[in-house]
Image 1 (tube, rainbow, N blue to C red):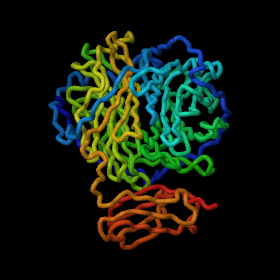
Image 2: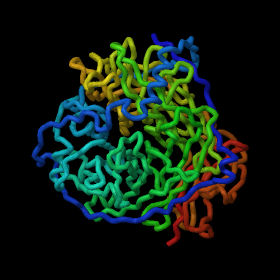
Image 3: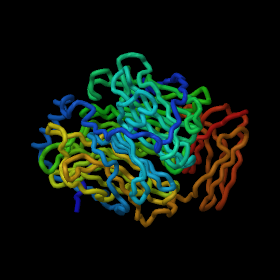
Image 4: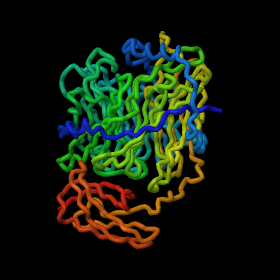
Length: 617
């Protein structure tokens, strides 16, 4: 039985003093078009010898050594009595189903990610390797990333893979990096032509050094919406580590339909993402979940290298490439609960595992709210923990957010990822959070917790118990992450699949894949908000928008239309809505082209919010 430690819930609000001077920074981006590099079936690629990565970055503690050693020293001396948080551990624990070892080859760090189709095909990736499995755990295909890169040209230095599944087009996207110098840096992007990832893909190579200087691209994170793919990367100086060589973060906005069709790839790059003249580090795109949105994409970022910081950045790209008007804006939130670089995690042999920094690692958009996770420190115990954030009213001028730190008195935890596990109903934000665990009593393994609609958190459930310590590098601190992957199974209610890491019997860092499902008795039950799910159509709209919703009783409602920046608000309708089904038609012919937020309001409570595109022919 785990005792779950208390960290008080904290409300994040916009920093009014910062917003007065820095309401938002804007980057209009620069357009690029890249030709198709090659269409090729993975099963036709001749494989290369299995590759092992032994720490791409310098050995742990070689950079930021004083900072990490300080945290570890404080932790080893600090004695803190655990305080039980009664709200944690009260949610229903998830159930572990089919689970198996993924990607047979060891690398450190693992960099686990995965995607699963509605048909049950699993695309599993780790540093240097790709594997395709059935959902029963049968391996169907495997290749090294270097073999794929070599089929595209003289490319053979591959790492940092990411995978994502498009539930509307029933296709996969694969992204990985090539080269860690300014001379050979590339971003490899692949789009599957079918729902079978063994068959043909359309591959593209995007320059990793568009500034033509001594820098290269590192650490991609990806997301999609209805029309586009988004890739964020960090630009680093040659011959430096990611800890000390950071220059700035990029965002690539890509027309995904071009990629799936094998056409020339229309893209836009944003690289002027700064605050107070300082570049913002490591943007995390916010994944859509049961419904792909369009247009627009949110991103989140912290000041991840700080021992303590209370700044949260909310970024937004407001339109499509095709619109010709897409821009990225950055707004600043100030938290009264600081995140910070975590100390390293313990293993049973008292050797440590690297926990990196406090960047945002995974985020999702559901019912107009953002939930996100990352590494942080639990300042009560000086142990590595998970930062769980929530941002409400994301499209309004003043979003409200809350943060909660998850920690356990007998586990060190890190490298979380989050996916939706609810039914899509308004007010239902049920989620699964996957992460790596280790401690003086537990070998490194994979765990999951369930977050219910009331934001209660379950006790941790082991998906894979470690078999031994991780001991690969000639150092007292071993590489561990650098990230995990989790995805909703879109056609199975309350089911997610995850990919994380564990220490195997011969002290290697290996990947583990598992199915987890919710047994929440409220799964699929409409939350008692008093209102049913709201529908609006068509979207995009030209002259007339229809809004449909049900009311439990006759009540006064208001329909508002708000500009993205919150500066322009128009009340489109205010009337007594009857009990039962209501259908309201709104005239939009006089509204200028653009992206807006439509809100349904009852009293002071917003009961529905969705962005719409007004587009006159």
